[in-house]
Image 1 (tube, rainbow, N blue to C red):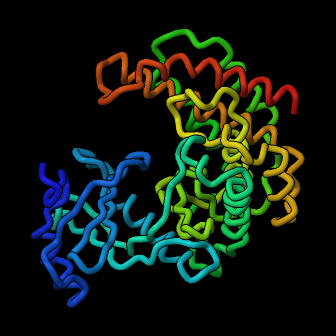
Image 2 (image 1 turned 90 degrees about the vertical axis):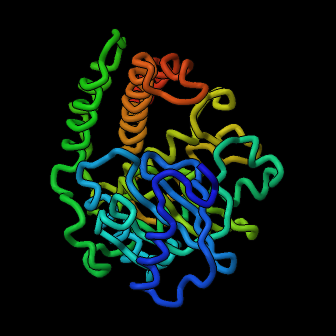
Image 3 (image 1 turned 45 degrees about the horizontal axis):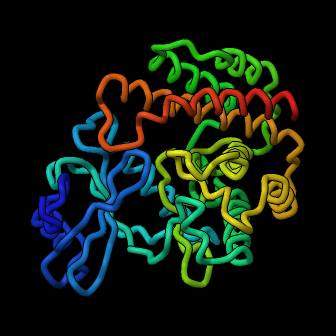
Length: 340
């Protein structure tokens, strides 16, 4: 496919829709490219030679509840755009499948860098790296400070029983991709269930909050938080646990997952937890549970990828090593829970 017509995006039909819904927005002929990254939804950078936008749509061939996905993502960034949380400005939501073959939305293009690996932070040096990662925590504090009802997100999720439902959901995900013995994973799942912490008041949670899901500007500030497809109302400490898990990766440099933990100057888990507690005023004494839960969730996600790899359903390199990582995540989860 040429860059003018990437898979899944018919530029002529998109242009016609933009001209109808937002006359004058696009002025020249459109070209587009697929942006790599993101969990599953497809992201394109679109330009008319003068301005740039981003289009998000569900994955190709994915037909279930797609309108719901796009509507949710568009809804959360629309609600957060007027707040202190940096998100791209949403420009248009189209739930008609007839335009490009699926629902989609258009938002402004934000310049910035998603740092995915420790090596990418090296040019910043330790001081700036530390500032960027602490800024990530401060932005999370801002997100969790948004009053969901005041932002129009009072019904964006069901906070009651949030942690129990999450544990059940990821247990089911695990069962769906079980095709080998994984020592310790059932023990970890059961231990998490026995030690469920009481949740603080519900906030908007991002669901996949880490450095490679934000865009950092040349001023080292976070210019946009991206990838809201897992966002809901729930326990804010699940976001913190995930961030702590990613920042505590040992031997992270050669892992085929995105982690920046090994970069010089990168704050360790204790500093991140302290920074969040100071900024949010929340009790973080049970953060070990949330971190262990993040390890469990990642173990399940990686096992799912490994399962698809064994069936020959993955595309690209590096998937052969994913299976070896799963026991590491299980062990880290058990250790984190035991050591508290």
